[in-house]
Amino acid sequence: MTILNFVSQDELDDLDDDPRIAFMMLVNHAQRSLSEQTKGLTEEDWQQREELRHSFMNVVIAAAKRIEIEPFVSMEVPRFSDFKENVDYRQFKADLDHYITQLVIDNSIRAKRDSVAILPDSKDRIRKYVHALRECIEKGNMSDAKREALLKKLDLFEAELEKRRLNILVVARVVLELLALPGGVWASVDVAHKLISNIMQTVAEAKSAEQETRQLTPTAPTKALSPPRTKEPVPVPTFGRVADIIDDNIPF
Image (cartoon, rainbow, N blue to C red; front, side, top):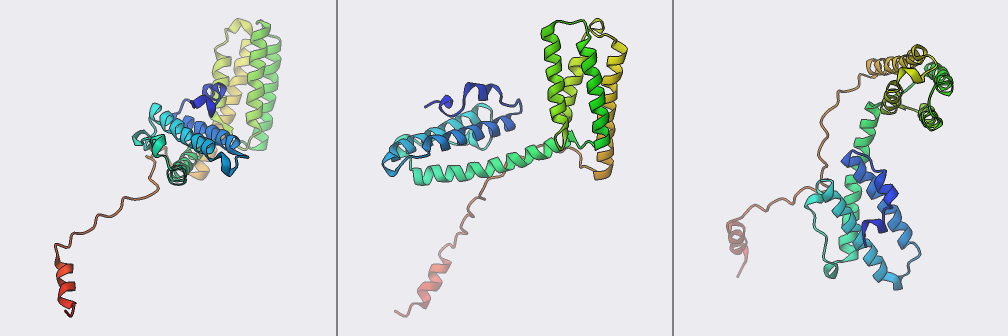
């Protein structure tokens, strides 16, 4: 089996550029697919289930090696002839869950730094700016395809605005695309740029106020993933002393 038995090409194409997030997304897709494929299998179907689980391990480890996610880069896939489902797969799944938990938390922390909570009054102002931008685009001198694409960008922006926290990267992408338009396409380039500037300023003020209030810690380097178990302690050599004591206490 190949990766396409667990993850579709569209899902692969939509993976994030960040290797850690991409790996997390890929594992999530693969786990759901494995669950669907093994659902309903009986005890008599153990060979099929075993093959699916071994293939899942193969795909996850191969993907991690390609995008360089430790510690999976250093792992080896068990030979199928040596594969023990109740041992190899269960331990791999437990370790995988341990690492994915860390990735999810890392992603949540990063997403918090790259987003901002917008107060209701500020959201209302931004909605007014976006509505005015729509009018500028609809009256602008551009092709229908370009107009439709820009309006869809604003749709996505407004959908993001309804979330609990606004992703600043989404704001930046929309703003950059609008600012890249030639001045001649706007009904009034000055009005359009003023509206864009107002959106940027409102978001920037919200982020500044949040940082002052919460005193968010500065961005630190991404930590390496921690293993689920520490190494087994190395036994301290006795050099025969314990054996000698035991021998001295034996009454024969």
